[in-house]
Image (cartoon, rainbow, N blue to C red):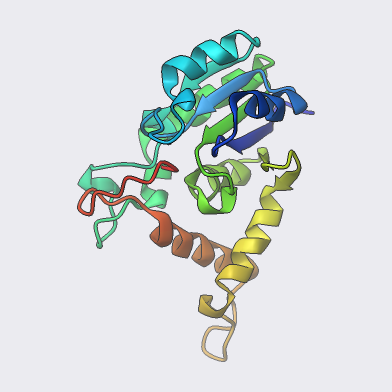
Length: 209
């Protein structure tokens, strides 16, 4: 495994011991929490304080990147015209870029890192559509730990994303013959962004952000 390899994982409703098994199966030594708020109303053992202590007992470092990688924003400059968080604008923000720098340093220092949010399925979580997409573009090898301990690559999730939005994607025509698969994937990401994005005006409280 090279220094550009990292993982993502969702805590879901897993019991603590099983969640630890997921991390240990892939030899995770640093867990970066990408939830905007490090708390769960339904699974309080994944609140910041008890989770930090639990992981420390197993030799795993806990960090919280809410400013860097969280997806709940109220800054109008990070919202789209409909008042929802625009993932592309977040990815271009200074905080997000600082997060990538810190992530890179951690990998270079020998940590095996997993980015954690709450949603079990990465396809329905911003850790894939907002964060991993940017990391993959920068050459990181991103692997998503699923609840049955198997892995899904970022490429596999992109194929699933493409399939989900296939009927809404642009296709080459006589007037626009140069539409590529990458153009279609970017459109699929934008559609997913709109589907799951937080809006400060509608008080979306989904824990997977």
